[in-house]
Amino acid sequence: VKKFARRHAEGGRKPAQTAVIGAGIMGGGIAYTTALRGTPVRMKDIAQGALDLGMGEARRQLAKQVESGRLAQEKADKVLAAITPQTDDSGFGEVELAVEAVVENLGVKHEVMAALQQALRPGTVLASNTSSLRIDDIAAPLPRPEDVAGLHFFNPVPVMPLVEVVRGSRSSAEAVATATAYASGLGKTPIVVKDCPGFLVNRILTPYIIAFCDLVAEGADYEQVDRAMEAFGWPMGPAYLEDVVGMDTGSHVIDVISAGYPGRMRPPERNAIRALVAAKRLGQKSGGGFYDYDAAGGKPKR
Ligand code: NAI
Image (cartoon, rainbow, N blue to C red; front, side):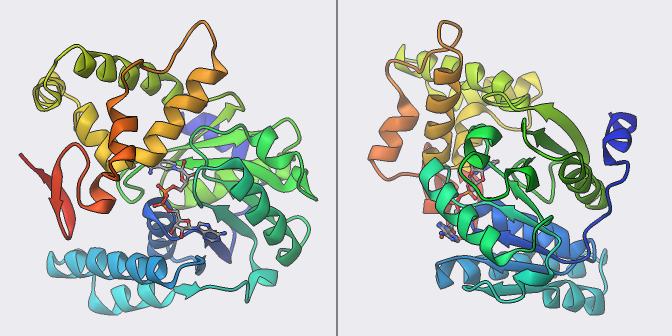
């Protein structure tokens, strides 16, 4: 995989200035990981509260590393100073790669990315962290579709090694190479994938989550399913995984990916994930989903 990534990164240069748009679960993690690897990052959100949470989480992660002796306080201060939280586009003219990580909604992404391309210089890579939408659908109405590619990180970003670099039909070779070089520079393992619904990982994972919903609808206890899958060797069972992902995002991913493979995938008839969205139990980020969580998130109470 590493050799494959190197080939795609050829001609790509690790960006010196970056931006992340959306400071939620994913955007906050991407900004923190970028800063930790020594690259300055502008972190933009429309909500000051989201920026505060993102900075708070970065501070918490850094404090843990300092406490355990893995990081000097001086280095931790530098990492934090490399993240600039902002609600406007200041400094975007100097950015060489921007990652969009706003909500999983095509209309919102179009609006946000079209506005971003006004602020970014032509040739600046604008990568989407979408987990289910096609890059071609995202790029189609934008002024410079050739600058757009996918950069699909996994949750939690600082921990998960894989990154899917998605090549849309109009993505330039330079955009793909720069996105790959950026992911490699973060110490990740990038793979370049085709622009199909679910890319590689979620295309495999979605039928698993659908089967989990079917099991629950047939009367299985989600906690027992989690314990079984964890005993099988997975780091977390499907219910806990959806809590970490966020129920709104997870529900959307099932709908979009199953619609992309009619006859081969179908959304669950009785969908426990959608029911939790309706009940406003969005998972770890809202204090509860399948399980309940304390204020700092962390492990489920079970
Ligand atoms: P989230 O709900 O935690 O965060 C989204 C953030 O975007 C919020 O802070 C919101 O204030 C902000 N936002 C909304 N409109 C905005 C705008 N116009 N300008 C700037 N910021 C805006 O969502 P999450 O989970 O971080 O997902 C973000 C993207 O990452 C989605 O496309 C999702 O599919 C993808 N993704 C999510 C994963 C997960 O496990 N949650 C995994 C991989 C990808």
